[in-house]
Length: 225
Image 1 (cartoon, rainbow, N blue to C red):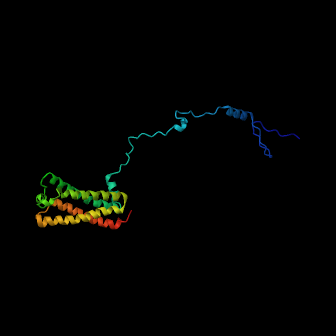
Image 2 (tube, rainbow, N blue to C red):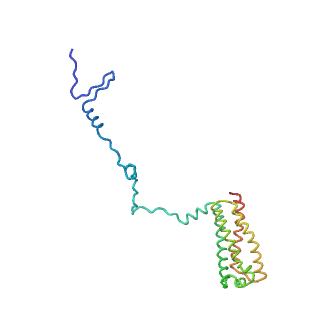
């Protein structure tokens, strides 16, 4: 009985017993070449690390056609401040305090330079400034009011930044004292000096309004720490 010969060029199939076929000459030559090839190592850099690890990704240069990065506008910052109740209360007290600061600063400069303040709406600023009630112990009354307002500004800004409700008692307490002082000065203007200073009235109204705002703020935020 003649045995069947396999055709040349065809691969032999593994036998049913699962024995592996021995590698051919080409496979053994490729393996020996791969084993004899020296392993390549990364070149060390001056810092001691490999050159591939020391490479940093290059930043792309701006293209003329690309849009410029967005910049925060003052309007957006103002909207952010007024976005909550604390910011709105703080902004109201700051604005009123700044109005009083402007009026009191002008009166202090005019008093220290012995000048007559410019009056509008009503006449009598020069009479009030020339009276003996415009100074206390040689210091212009407007300077005392200016110091009061600056303390209020510092306390309000600190409260807005930190959220500590105890700071609200500073504008509340100083405003309460200022109400009595303003009432006394208004009495002197109307019944003793018989003249009204519009700058004094502007500062007084701003301080009273700021004190009223501080009352509401203390009730809402006075216990926060």
